[in-house]
Image 1: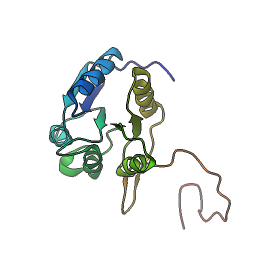
Image 2: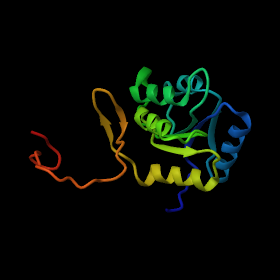
Image 3: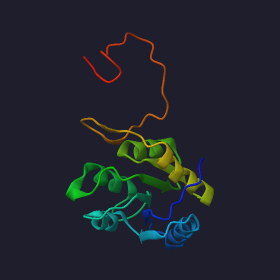
Image 4: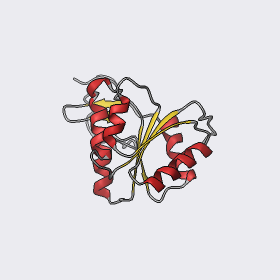
Length: 166
């Protein structure tokens, strides 16, 4: 992991719990990020994003009136001119596999379990920088490629080359 200069990033923090929002802002400031927009729900975040450029969203999953899953799904849809490629780190106190898969399938870039630490936040930001995932569009999904590892394929190769299908 490299040391990055994060001073020029614009980051939105969406967290409905005010003490947690303050902690996240403090950690991001300590990492050198100066432009931090803090909000307490996904609906306000989406309204803010219309016509604005941001580099990263860090959002809690459980917010009202729009939660993190609904927010990332709406962003990935590209609705109302919002950039669907914005990296999205979801923070949640829920770490059961079903919720993580739901977040992944909604189009998050990274998942971070609470309680958070400065080190873990920096690792997720670094991961977004160092390992940007290609975006995939299917009839039912648009977002970062959900595959985290390359699996060896054992079968008949049906592609003409590595990037085309018959």
